[in-house]
Image 1 (cartoon, rainbow, N blue to C red):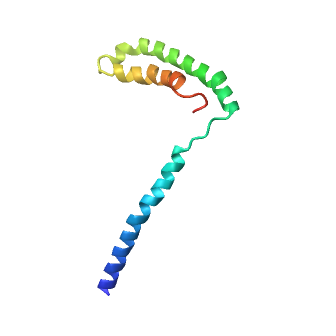
Image 2 (image 1 turned 90 degrees about the vertical axis):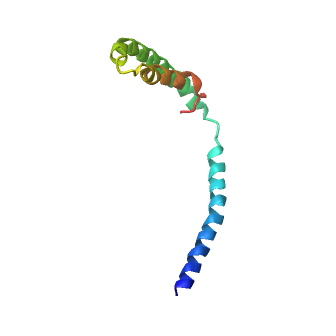
Image 3 (image 1 turned 60 degrees about the horizontal axis):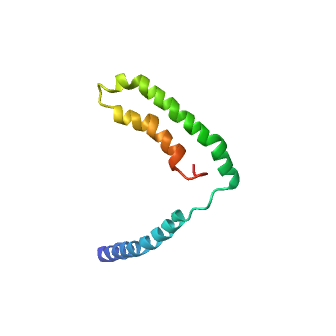
Length: 100
């Protein structure tokens, strides 16, 4: 009885090890395929999201300047810059149009 159970477990493990790479390849191919954004999405990005990103970047910059004295003693100036200025700048200027 124990021998049959052991052989069954080994066969199931071998089958799983053979099947898993086939499924992961199919999932990876699906994630690689990206469709081009719709024209309406691109227009909304240009007219709404990009101006909001620029205003967020400037607001973050001025808030960063105002709060640097609080970040400096803790050594968090670089992290604050990345979160308050760099992240909105990357959202606004570095990503493709229509890619949210």
